[in-house]
Figure 1: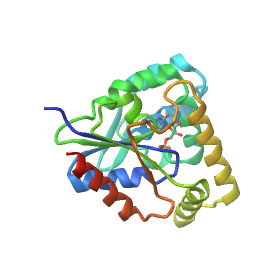
Figure 2: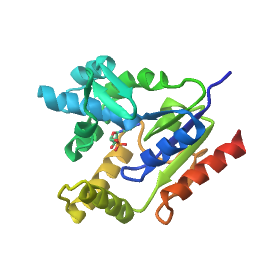
Figure 3: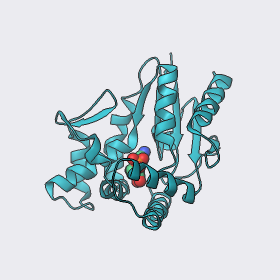
Figure 4: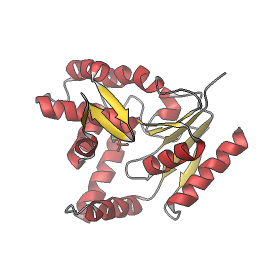
Length: 218
Ligand code: C5P
């Protein structure tokens, strides 16, 4: 029997990760934050002084990185790097390495291996278009750039980090542009994906909407 997949794609800081993780927990499904794989490759490059454009070296690393996922944390060689991969500059690096076709190809099977019973909820940029084109439910989750910048700003301030709202907004716009303009797996809404604009929605409302769509399709 085909293992069900819910694919949630969308721009950075849209809240798709939080929504996807909660939907997975409500359904008892596995959860894959595909961005964490791109972030791991960027962190590896950063730690080893590898250029973010060194496609062959990074593709090899993407194939072999000893990454594991445990209780919602991301581990590299057994070390918890969850916080390190969430740093802003690693996010920018992830979008640089994510533009390299060989890196994307290397990560393809690693992502597909997460599909396991009873089901998978995954979020990223190309989950519905490339990695799981036969997903049972595809969602394009977004929010206005102002709202996303505001959420990211509050998140950083909440963690006691310094943050500059206009800079965050600009970084979000630049990252969206890079993700949408690349030739391989550009960020875009698939024709068969539902649009979920969360600018005016709470996380709970977004989660309920995804669950309702899934129930309708099941
Ligand atoms: O979702 P997150 O912000 O963690 O992703 C970081 C970067 O990784 C994105 O800006 C994007 O360039 C890249 N990415 C990707 N494809 C995915 C997930 C993330 O290209 N499926």
